[in-house]
Image (cartoon, rainbow, N blue to C red):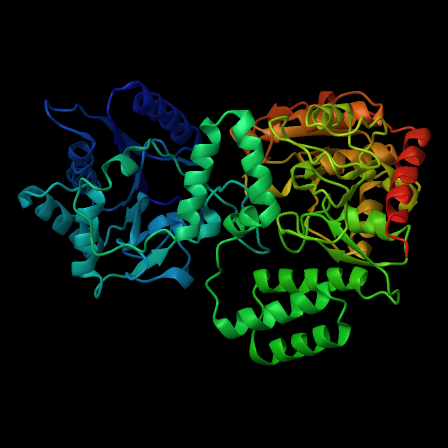
Length: 584
């Protein structure tokens, strides 16, 4: 394939924020071998941010005029691209970019957005209509006397020319989002968005198109609550948290955004999910059959269908006894570490296991086990091996504690007025006693396993690395996952419970996080020390690594750490003791 004829352009003011980003962007584009034009612009006396941004239109026109046979891309100077995919660099469309607010095709419509295009990264081709769009935007910018930013003039030119323009939307999966989920067959993400905060500051001071869809009441309240929570002292903050968690306000405010699917599809998926959760096998099969007669399942749909079957495995048992177990069931189709909870519990009881969602209130006795979900322990909870992700919380002092993850969790419990707990250990460390596998000859390769919040990060792997996914929930899938894992020489992971599983089976393992993405995994990081102290092993905190692992000497990352047989048996005793609380 011939090298695409493209130019990437941007400009910046010489202040510290934009100046530093310009240097970084220049270095990145040079490394990628992409032709570029970066211009330093000066603010005139009296100019503000909006005045500077509208100059982009004239600058882009000049770049287009200087390069009449090349596709010209604009990128905000604080954004980044890890590479430029062929489907973008070799596009034949007049105009290419992300939809406003990085929306998906299911969200197209001016009733949803004030503008159609996201202005942080877009390109115009060396076509008659592409260049006419830029010429029209520039002509308007030169004569307009309104207070407006660059994207206003781009939007006006787009609306005026849209009937004649061919355009291409870049898929939203191309964005490196925090905690984003990947889908089979998607293009690897290449674009990361930067934000100086100026957009929000000037939102009500510049001319906008139409009426934007307002942020939902629930999201507005959540934002305000988070801002308030940050400034409140602990003595006030913790009681408010307990009240919000206890009556279900937290669950209401933090539930996922509604998906853009039609009501009939949503109803059918909900019927399958409810049937799986409640042990109704026939209802699940009927709902699945009805769905397949009407719809073609998307990746998201299939994840819901798969997790419904996983719920059914635990809820459809012949026993009359029920144990509500608390774990994070999302993201669908399930996350390995979270779904260890019902697996470990079900191994030592014949009772039905049903989900008690962490953020939902309940008057029934419930079992809380694996995960950093100590905040959601309720007065009627039975607790075994649960941990915390931050010491800035208060634990329920009335719950029935059989063990906690480690001494740091125990100290927070004691400070909260709860009992002194001296039995420690994350239940996941005993997985090798539940799924007994023997480690034999290995394959000479390294398994690379990311925390689900890291799945969209564009990493480059060495030849001897194999990527293995943690997105699974059914016990058969978990067994296959572990059977695969013990065949590797070692594991490099950013998922704590993958590391814990490795230490249970005696697989050498390295724990990492990724430069620039350290905040993806919630919490302050105390859970790693808490786990290790509770398990009686060496503390292993995540090591920050670059996204290009081909330049990394990974041998120093990996440690051969194993949990003792005695600790595993101690943890199993605590699990059995907790389960006994639910015997009829």
